[in-house]
Length: 280
Ligand SMILES: Nc1ncnc2c1ncn2[C@@H]1O[C@H](COP(=O)(O)OP(=O)(O)OP(=O)(O)O)[C@@H](O)[C@H]1O
Ligand SMILES: O=P(O)(O)OC[C@H]1O[C@H](OP(=O)(O)OP(=O)(O)O)[C@H](O)[C@@H]1O
Ligand SMILES: [Mg+2]
Image (tube, rainbow, N blue to C red):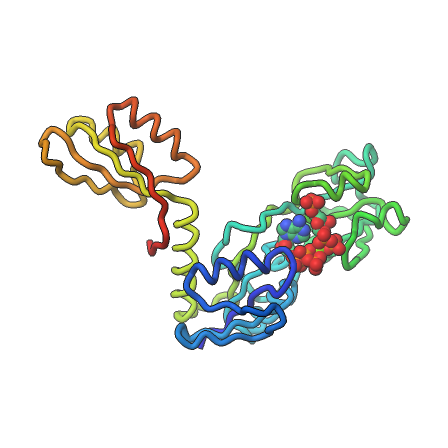
């Protein structure tokens, strides 16, 4: 039986459960449930704090889990990223009072507040920046105003929290984070492969659409170059032997641009449909 850790609350929780449900797994109905068995899929889900998930997976107590890339790196455990999941995107960045800092080098000798001290210490050490790291549990943006730090390193999504606190980002992003599926370092788990394939299927179903169109036979190569698909487009004969029908998966974000280009090329009856589920 595969043992899977799922965030129980916070920014990752709802989307993680929704993605697992879409992948065909049973999910809890009551947010107070801590463990849930899905006997049809031979899986047990454990609902835990996302920060702790890397610890359980790193120790091998649980096989795989969903957490944030930033939380995984911060935990400094024997766990690794298996699959990026495309939700809960954020950056991890330095910020300070407006006008105080322009470069990361200026942090030398300063006090830095963060909830991600493992991640931050690693970053500073790699660059030889000697700053004092003050570990706080949350609401890190208040630390400067309250006098325990000169600058912060924190999760930034919209930037609204920073703005409200009179702060601004500086330097390059420390990390681009998103939700990720993690497993124990160096361990191949065949039972996890089905889960990974199913999650990949959900990602592809979100990121691609199915496009159908008719095109004159002599233009099919040019059209196929616009819609190469994942492997190769399906080309089927039509009753009118001068024309063929083409079917191909297309990145959702490029749908309208590709339709315009196909139309200009001479394609007609261009149809787009959503992909409900898939295995690639
Ligand atoms: N706006 C956001 N605020 C916090 N975390 C975010 C945000 N957007 C994405 N994330 C990601 O969510 C994960 C943090 O989730 P976690 O549940 O620990 O914190 P949280 O959502 O801030 O909840 P809480 O503060 O109530 O503990 C990190 O991987 C982080 O990058
Ligand atoms: O860029 P934004 O969209 O404003 O989001 C980022 C903010 O959200 C999170 O705080 P949260 O609400 O989780 O409070 P916390 O600091 O107490 O964890 C995070 O720590 C930032 O403060
Ligand atoms: Mg938080």
